Amino acid sequence: MSAITRDEVAHLARLSRLALTGDELDHYATQLDAIIEAVAKVAEVAAEDVPPSSHALPLTNVYRADEVRQSLTPEQALAGAPAVEDDRFRVPRILGEEA
Image (cartoon, rainbow, N blue to C red; front, side, top):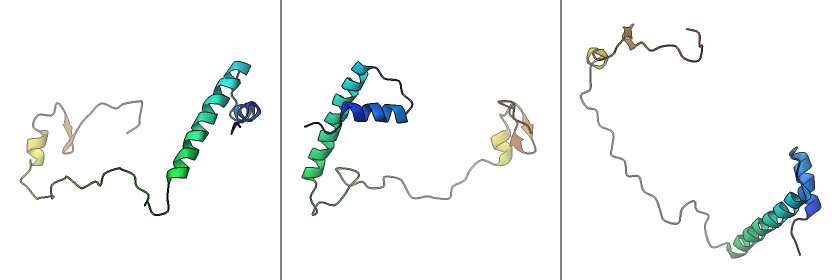
């Protein structure tokens, strides 16, 4: 027995403001039914003793620890800039934004 009918797909299409042909309704009903069956199979496998997880393998942080290091002075950072204003990079205005 199908989990979703052609009439249910038509109802969803109306709610979504989609104009679907009869062939599309049949096609989507078949596809949605396959999706619902696949989800039902996964639900059957899930057991209470299996904790939910987002990944099959455990993840560990691979980033290095933060360290304070020597960096550029504002003058050095702005030295190669084509335009500078108030110790900042001056860039052209975009998308008609106001200052």
